[in-house]
Image 1 (cartoon, rainbow, N blue to C red):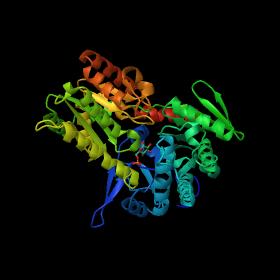
Image 2 (cartoon, protein in one colour):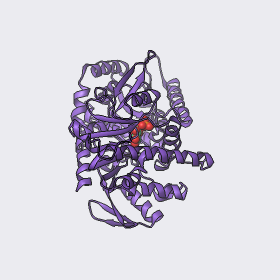
Image 3 (tube, rainbow, N blue to C red):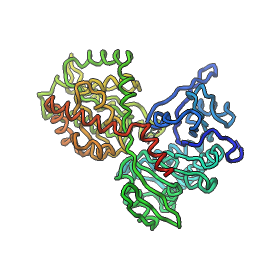
Image 4 (cartoon, protein in one colour):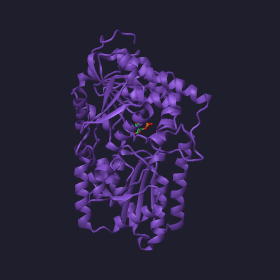
Amino acid sequence: SGAAPGSRTAGQVLVASNRGPVSYSLAEDGTLTARRGGGGLVSGLSALDEDSGTWVCAALSDADREAARLAGGGTLDRSDTGGRAVRMLDIPQATFDAAYNGVANSVLWFVHHMLYQSPVEPVFDRAFEDRWEEFQRYNAAFAEALAEEAAAGATVLVQDYHLSLVPRLLRTLRPDLRVGHFSHTPWAPVDAFRLLPDPIARQVLLGILGADRAAFLTWRWAEAFAECCRVLLGAEVTDHGHELRIGHDGSTTRIGVHGLGADGAFLRERASRPDVDERLAALREQVGDRRTIVRVDRTELSKNIVRGLLAYERLLEDHPEWLDRVVHVAFAYPSRQDLAVYRAYTEEVGRVAAAINERFGTDDWQPVVLHVKDDFARSLAAYRMADVALVNPIRDGMNLVAKEIPVLAERGCALVLSREAGAFAELGDDALEVNPYDIAGTAAALHAALLMPAGERAERSRRLAAAATALPPQSWFLAQLAALRA
Ligand code: G6P
């Protein structure tokens, strides 16, 4: 670090995100093993050749920090990253924890997903003020690293709520850069957003407005952001058809939308491999000739897994004709376990699933098959066998599972979809709409989904798959880049 601006010319396009494309684990003997991750951003960036992209991310664990130190503040060994330049920031652990757990995931995530409900309320005390300082430090570390890595006039794509202060900080350090910000979450309506203390709410909005262009997954979130800027900053919002413009303090930020889609080609290829076939055979063995209701999520409060299980229980109560004729395959993979509220939620999911099995199960029928160990091949196997997909988040930026299942469901699937997921804007016409809080309504939608005639189901599923793959990750990424450079 400490290099002069532009002296590292690894890329004309830089991506910044909290979670990078690679993570490390540390064996007892001290050896580091790299594991490459997936997701929309990783596939998106593959649209660029290896030499033109640089990714700046945070070290998330001790092993990551060790790898970052070994890289001496520069980019990681390219054999670990599939050839791409990745700079992993060795942010002091206390700063990282306060920023990631203490601000981004427990406060900003809660605000945008409207997860605060009495008695779970935000606490803005002195300890929070300290965490907010660390959050600023963490954002500054990203801005400084990007300023060092970027060649003159480079384009920078800053990702998500963790890094909402980066665009403005970076603009101050490097006015020559083109900076974009992309939000992968919903954006809270004004009345929810202003739960944040005024100076912090303003700083978040101004942080993002430091970008030349800020983009969102749907117009609903883009408009909510613009409305926050209008009401809380007195900014001027104008509508230019395909973009909004937000004028504030003499500068203008363009606002656009890119609805990240499923990667159909990748999914079909990956799902046809032998490890997926094996898992499919095992699941089929367990389910037999019964119908399958599938859900796959991170064990995340906003995903509303418990109410999904309760809706399934209600289905079995209200419609005993489904007893022994349906299985709910529910995969809930641990997430953000450093937060107590997530640990408690993970336990609750297990408890509720066990109670349903206890209540309705028989010697040869297990009503809920819950798996919590992350296994991508098994998720794809479940997608292939889905008759019904249950996606009922309280709020969700997009929800890619809703887009992926129809692509792979072999018999076509009926999609039960929350109207509060970003994906609803694109898939709503062919999905069964639910209010995520309405358990009886969700049970009724599951019943309707199970009863949907095979022909109609196949037809709808085909249309869902087409809508879901309209903007695959590479096109999504290139569209953002083109719009930012326009
Ligand atoms: C959401 C966020 C991402 C985040 C992901 C996984 O999709 O928008 O920024 O990376 O969840 O969460 P985690 O906290 O494990 O990175």
